[in-house]
Image 1 (cartoon, one colour):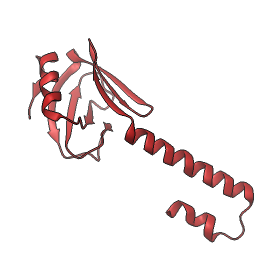
Image 2 (cartoon, helix red, strand yellow; image 1 turned 60 degrees about the horizontal axis):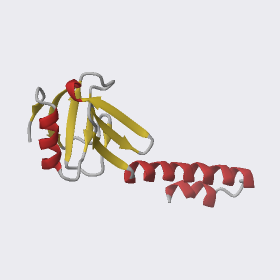
Image 3 (cartoon, helix red, strand yellow; image 1 turned 30 degrees about the vertical axis):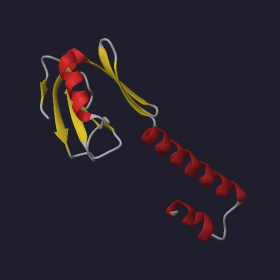
Image 4 (cartoon, helix red, strand yellow; image 1 turned 90 degrees about the vertical axis):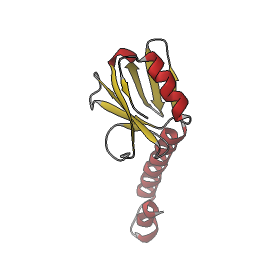
Length: 123
């Protein structure tokens, strides 16, 4: 609603300005909803595929070094939908880690441990 205040309160706006502001608001809301509701974590043969809206990561299992639970969901590269999160540290990432929140955390950790025997995994 705060984004609509300039449209409502500014009396000297043109139809083009209103259209542009509404278009930007619509695009922003759609992007946020796309990222929030299109989250997938898929175990592929050679890598973990992580998708959140337009953002995608393919992490090779041999590159994963550590998996730890985390409550720090505001910092770093994250594709998650809850505060009950896991941080996956890996060698090839630009930021070195990704924070995710699989629905069934225990099952996810067991499968990841099976595929990444050299990784340090803590629950």
